[in-house]
Length: 508
Image (tube, rainbow, N blue to C red):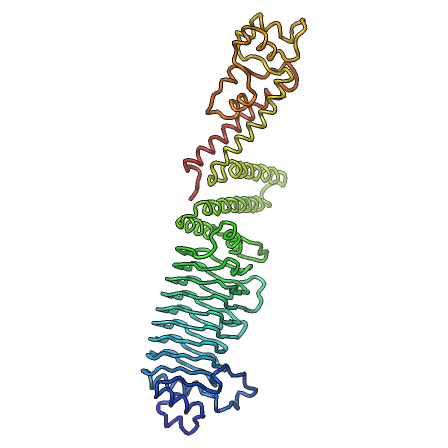
């Protein structure tokens, strides 16, 4: 590409706009062409209005030769490529409402002052591995070349902010490995690329990027085609969860220190569900990753939102259980060629049934250790259920004193249904109300008896005094067998609740 070394080389073919640019640069003024607004695209790029046309090679000359004077241009049409690669630029470069016909190449250069394209239009901008000591501003700028990388900041280093505020990017934006000391502002911008069925090429690539200050993603930013935040590091995440694309979001290894914005568990869990494998994306080829959930829970906890953090971890445990059973099914399916079908069928149902049962028990009783007080509600439910069975057995005469001395006493023998003498419908109740020994016996309480059976760590004395009888009707028989089941579940729920309260079964 031609490089001008003096104005004498340019002068014979200089356009009116280039003369005006020379005067503005030498005077340190802004060069405003036409109305200063973005010019419409020329019908014939080989015949551009000389009042607006500046060649890219001429702009490079002014940047090279007048490196101490800022170049501020408005309303120009830039013909030919603007190549500022592999150089050091000392001046501020600002193109406002300018239209570039060819790609802008800023790669592998060092810009010691701010570079701005505001309200402008170009086809591609390449700043791969460039160093910007101050800001890179692309506000309200349109970069359009669908199916290509329209903004390449791979490996770039920016000492200030990168602003794409209200920009429109038709193609992918690649910031792989970029390091930004200030903010990355994506608010109110539009990112659109050509459809891709499996979203293997995200529209925004922030993989392994480091943003020391803040990633700002709000004000109805539109992202079509996905975003990759894999292994990205951000100081502060300032976002609207609804701005995250519904499909193709990847965030495994995404680390941030704090959130400014929505922190409710409900909103953030829906936000996380959009990440790889976690949402409704049936076309996603990405495996489910737990790290985004753990990261969110950690940040919410550190910010003082402990309840929301526990809810996030609770949802994570549910998803991990589903993933575990999915892997188990796949493992069993791999035995297809080496084991009988009946054996596989039995093993599948046994293993999956056991896993489902254990998962259900942990979820219902203690919320996987995240909601330990849920066990109190479960115990209360068991007590109420057993209480109803106890009432049925008592009122149908299915109880007897639980003492060998009482059972062999003459007073109780009067009420024994095995006797030929007439007996009352409820022998235990009648005995405790009408006999002296019965009145001195432990009074029966159905709810206390139920609590005695279900909760192993308390003792109301009911189970020592009373017991269901298997000879006094079906209600007593049912209760006699049911107490073993309820006692077992009571032990399990109590043990899980105690373990959850002490943090034993939490998996941080």
